[in-house]
Image (cartoon, rainbow, N blue to C red; front, top):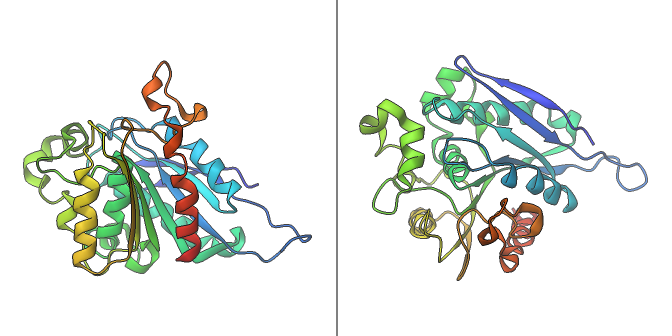
Length: 269
């Protein structure tokens, strides 16, 4: 395995990309090209959660996928700092695709909660000039082939998780709040999407996933969505390995099959 910490540098910030890149074996297939899953943990744009980082990467590895975790900038950094960092992480992945045996047609952005907002932001903004011109890159270099959203923050409207948007925008809140309500930004160029959420989520309401799914449908973007009837926010894998300290509400084993279903979706892209 190639397990490295790579600096992702923009003009205004520096993030860390932790790689979990599988080695090929001549005994099995020395030329195998694998999907790459770029994981954006949640944390309300205030921190990046360990519970939605390495445990997810290890599970992705177990399914035969490369993975990496982006520890992106959070408060006091404001939009579009984290989005620029994610964009440059995708560039890093694509430019090293041959060396790392990556299937360039399966670069997937996986985001959790506020990290889901970041992943979905790249999904809707990848072809906008404010990213390519500011970073000096082509739009095609940062285009995801799919986005995987776990209980994502999407809307700044009635179902908003206001804390995420306050942290994301800072003093630009009033100016940009409507621009980062992502159900309004979906277009025909948004990548195929996998979503899952719990109906009982009382922190990031399930309406967030439904609004994004509805926008995808209106634009004829392929999607897969799973809604579990029970479960708190931030479940990650729902198992002991990702249970929050002294927080039994994050133990919900019946949601744990989302990652196998996501694996099937990734293989089918």
